[in-house]
Image 1 (cartoon, one colour):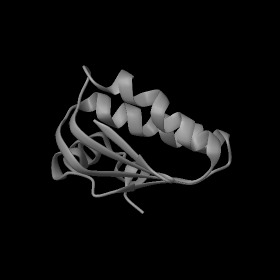
Image 2 (cartoon, helix red, strand yellow; image 1 turned 180 degrees about the vertical axis):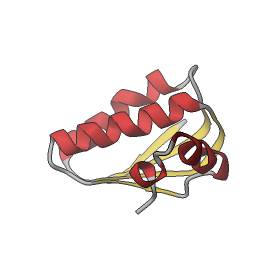
Image 3 (tube, rainbow, N blue to C red; image 1 turned 90 degrees about the vertical axis):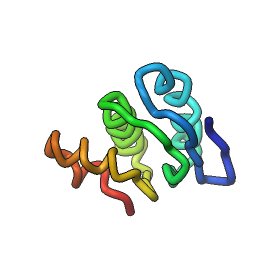
Image 4 (spheres, helix red, strand yellow; image 1 turned 45 degrees about the vertical axis):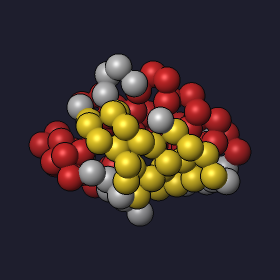
Length: 93
């Protein structure tokens, strides 16, 4: 589900209500150590809880004054972010 490689977290599989709680703290640990990149290329399914998780990670990074970037956002996640009007907040960088 999550693979850590230095400051990169690669998420795979579903990113839904049933899985987000198990992922939340792993990335928060990386954020505590500094800048982080979250790669979502292998994510197969998302729901609105995925957006909530990405926003939570972004807030945590801001609180710690570090950068978090999102790469390879799946099209369905981009569509949800656009629908909720937060695509600029979770946009990849």
